[in-house]
Image (cartoon, rainbow, N blue to C red; front, side, top):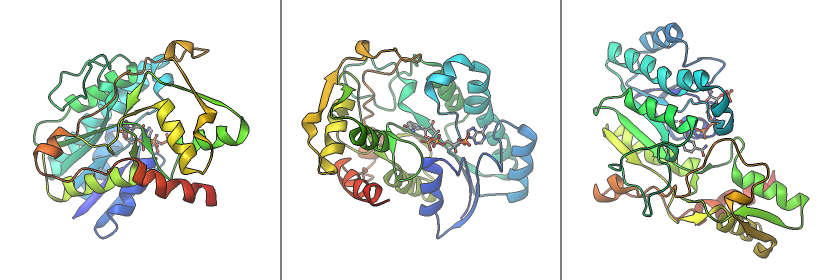
Length: 280
Ligand SMILES: NC(=O)c1ccc[n+]([C@@H]2O[C@H](COP(=O)([O-])OP(=O)(O)OC[C@H]3O[C@@H](n4cnc5c(N)ncnc54)[C@H](OP(=O)(O)O)[C@@H]3O)[C@@H](O)[C@H]2O)c1
């Protein structure tokens, strides 16, 4: 399979490049391709003529999205239109990465793929806009709380803060499924290679609050988890510009009910990652 991976310099993009190593891959980072540039997108897609395009490019700075809606719409939504246009011209399939932020988090139970999206933030609205650019023959993978070896993420932040402070405070009223980029990339690979269309929630398993997750990170690093204290989102000072969903838990129902393997409990990849991060 010839696979075009956009956003290849990001934390998921880098893992995607690795997991497709036994296929033919054209990987383009932000510098090589601005997905918001229609001419550049169509030029590249019609030159490469891939079998599949995996779009992991996005403007993921959730708070910054609030103050620059035009950039959010251009990168997270309109860019998907350009990619879909190119894909149509060469007969390629698309796999689009999306987010738990398409939900406002007020639902009491885990969200399934068929729940009505209702984003509360600009980032969530623009990512939903990207989803809406694609037809049912394409693949959309929503994920949450992504961590991994590459790029900035919460595991690295928690370990850094643990090195700088005796006690740490994390919110205990936002729950989600932490997801490790390498496990996510493996499931995406399967969906792309098997040409499975439709919307999939793909996360590691094990729902926790950020407070509980920070405790798990410290435990995995051999540190005392009781150094982490729970706080409420309302206690954050200053408050963050973009609202976060209180319930971000994505039920991987389409995988589960379709008989496809789920990514493991997050404690498994966390146990692999923390020693690697501590070694570097
Ligand atoms: N991180 C999470 O917790 C999370 C959760 C749910 C869903 N997702 C989704 O998962 C996907 C991958 O996210 P990630 O965690 O890998 O984020 P990331 O590390 O921020 O990677 C996104 C990449 O997109 C690039 N990019 C930004 N604007 C671009 C543009 N106009 N053209 C081309 N590339 C551009 C960025 O490059 P620069 O940095 O150089 O601008 C970055 O390398 C995204 O669709 C995101 O919405 C992420």
